[in-house]
Image 1 (cartoon, rainbow, N blue to C red):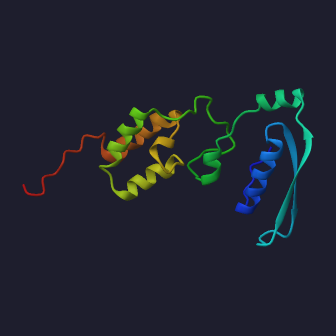
Image 2: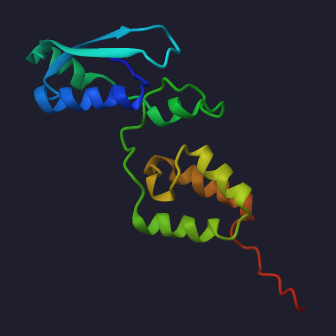
Image 3: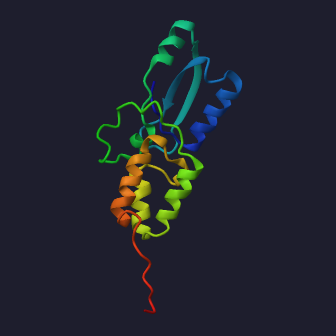
Length: 154
């Protein structure tokens, strides 16, 4: 299996195939017509063969990869091909709220760095497996959340 990056026209074709055949029951052949970088490149997507029970079992055993870290190209990710943790579900609403409250006290550049580190645009998209690292980073950025407010009129 491959991660494929494509244009909106390519993904419209994928949606058409999905509507007609379903994408969970078939293997597909994707053929490119055009050169790399050519804006007029087109793709044909055709069903190749039905997924049999043996192949389905192999697919279910395949380890998951952290696609978010693959897409960011972050050097902080030790190895983007390492499988994602099995407990990579989203963080709870309470944890998200607590992180947001701490982020509100930081500069915009620190908030951007925080979100980039975890490969998300919104705090609620963070994975529960990243929660400990997120809290540690917040401790580094805000001094453990113990910064007293400075009264500018004092």
